[in-house]
Image (tube, rainbow, N blue to C red; front, side, top):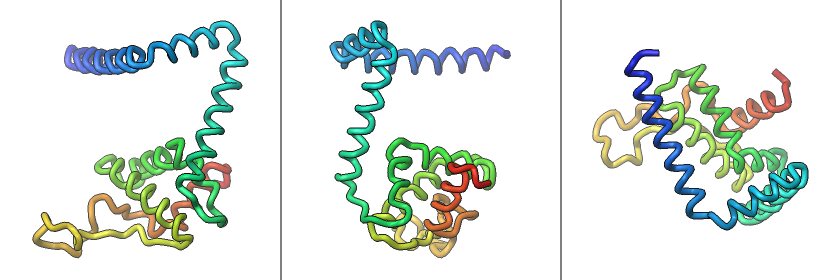
Length: 166
């Protein structure tokens, strides 16, 4: 590993260590209660963690309020980040790393809108509504994926991958 790479690794480790320390410091009481439970009964810790996540997902589903439909259960994977992660990884491989996070975030946002409206929405977007862009407003926006045409296609791709149908 070069000196440059070692320096970057040290900086990243320092940032993440400080971030983790801040989170623990801000939530000391909860942290120690959870740590004590984990150390005394690992199985019970994970059982309670699973139960808490289930309750949180149930509340979030009620808040987001997706109508009953074929793809409504994809919401769980939108909430836990797997849906966006899948598209981030897929876009990196099919369209390149450039703007893959913007594209996966856009796919996720439009998928949520499609689920709320219970209809298929296009994932094509241009710069028409961007006031800061003065020329070529009809060009495909950098956050719009080139390889996935609409939300039905995106959700099918996710299910095919998740359910190992590929």
